Length: 226
Image (cartoon, rainbow, N blue to C red; front, side, top):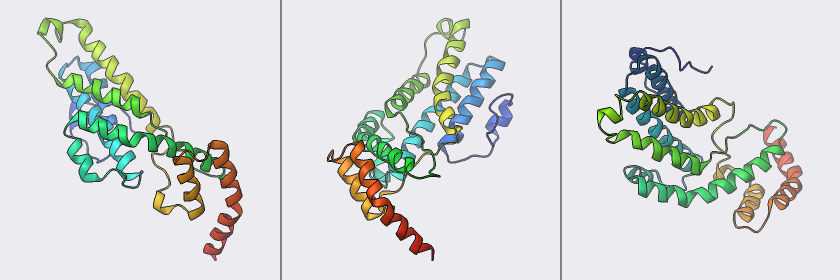
């Protein structure tokens, strides 16, 4: 059930139960933005920007540390998360493997009759969102250029809302953030993935090799159920 992000009071937003989850963070962002529209409170921009930026950082953690099988050690991610430049370099290092793995998983799941749908996150877009949300956490300028300017609050809300809606839309689409853990892949599947990762197979070759392996994998799963 998708929780509501409109019509909540400040006490309801601030007093809700804490959830350690990137989706909860973007929900908080949108809730503060909705409250800002109704109340005209400029401080809500900072509240929402903090939540949006944290949502992206938690999402990166889920993508690269959890779903990529620990290809980025959690301790290294924690160190880099304190400095945006280092974090961006870390993300850039891991992103190519993530993109290829998502392409591979798309082919693999399309061969399954009841395979789940997986979100393919736009890493470059998430970096832009993280950077632009961070701008609202710094000095914005003199009052006549900011909260005393009727356009300032509306423009800020619109900008943050557009970015947050991209993430929220993916979270509420019914798709999942994740993939098949590399250490859980069948040997035949992992071998095809490694060839694709190393550019020894293209997408057509991946599909062909997976189709060839399917009877063996199906038989193995059948034996395992007995």
